[in-house]
Amino acid sequence: MSSTVDLHDPNSSAFKKARRLYHKATKNRNPDLELDWSPFRAAEKKYKARFPPPDLSNVLDLATLDPSREDEIRQGVWRGSTAVHYIELSATNLSTPKVYSVPEIPGLVILPSFVSVEKQRELVRWSLCDQARENETNLDVHYDLPPEGLWNEYLQSRRNPTKDLLVKPKASVKGSPATSEPSGPRKLVNNTPATLQNFSAISTTPKPPQTPSATVKPASLSDLVLRLRWANIGWFYHWGTKQYDFAKGQGHIDSRLRELCREAVTAVDWKQVYGNYSSDWTEWATWNESYGGLTRDSAPVPILLRSGDVVIMSGPECRRAYHGKGLYIYMYLRHVSRGSLGVPRILDNTLPFYLNQDDEDWEPYKDYLSTTRININVRQVFPKGFQPELVNS
Image (tube, rainbow, N blue to C red; front, side, top):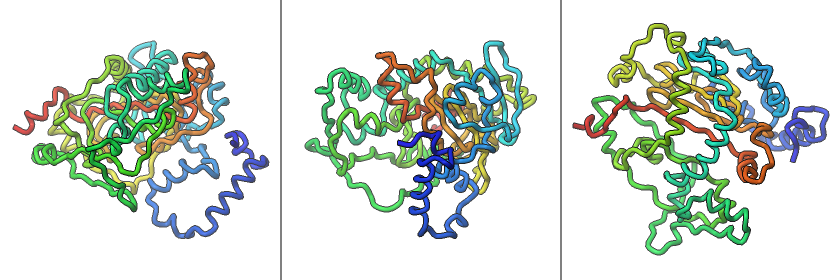
C-alpha cells in the first residue's frame, strides 16, 4: 500500500502508478461533467479525491499556529494554512488552549486540541464499548447483534480467535420480515422546515421501522465492527423520513459527554462572537424566524480538523444549512478534512502518535482508529426543556 508521503512526491513510483491508474479510469469521462456541479459539490469532490492528492493550501489549519503540534503535523504529512480569515478570541479560563472564530461563517467557533489525550482515549472506549452497545446503531436493524455489544464480543475474539463467530442476519431468523434493497440511486428526502404550525403533522408522520435486508450475509465480528457507521445519541433519529421519532422517547446522554459539552460552551466568550446577543435565540419562535435554508450554490469554507478538536456551530447563519437549529458541537477524535458543513473525509496515515501506541490494552483501538474516524455530534435541535407532547397539545 502506497504511503501518503509517496503520493505527495511526483517523482516517486507510487505517484506515477497512481497517475497512470487515474488517467486510465478517467479517459472516457465526460469532459463537461463538472459543469453541472454546484460550488459545494465541486469542493466536495476536490477534497475527497484520492488522486491527485488534494491541495490544502487554501484550507484553514489552526494547528499550524501552535508550535507544540509541529511533530503531530509532520507525522501526519497533511498541512493546511491560515489562508482563511480567522479571529482569535479570549478564552473564559486559562486552562483552555485557544478559541477561534471564522467570520465568514458567523457562529462557527473552533477549539483546537480542546479534548485532552486522556479524554480522547476515554471517549474512544466509551463510544465503542458502551454507546454502541446501549443505543441503536446502523447494524441493529439487519443483524442479531450480541447482547454484550458488538465491540465487546469482538475484543473477546481477538484474545481467542475461535470466538470470532458468525453473526446471523435478522432476515434469516424464522418469522422476521425482510426486504430487498432497491436498485438505483438513493432517494433524497427534502422535508419542509418545522414550525409551530406544522410540528404536530410532522411529529405524527408514520415512521415505520426499517425492515431487515434480505441480501446481507452472515458476517464475523471482526468484519461487522468495520461496518459500524453510527450509534444514536438522545432523541432517536428516523433515517427513513429524516425526522425524529418521539415515540421512542429520549435516549440517555452520558454524563461524561454532557460535561465535555458544557466545558466547551462555557470556554467561549460569546459576547466576542455575537456582541450583545439576546437570550431570545433560545426561543422556538425566534428560531423559526431566523433559520432559512442555504443551498449548495454556496462554496464551503474548507477546514482541516485534527484529533481532539472541537467545533461549535451556533447561531442562525452557521446552523441553518441543511441541518436545523440551535447548537451543534463536533468533537473529532480523529484527523479529518472537512469542507465546512460538508462531509468529513479521513486523511490517510494521520493517526496521531499518542493514539498509535502499542500497549496491549490499547492495541484493538489503535488498529480500529488506523482506518476509522470517530466523530461525536451533539445537536441542540429543540429549546431547553422541550416536550413534544406539549407542542402537540
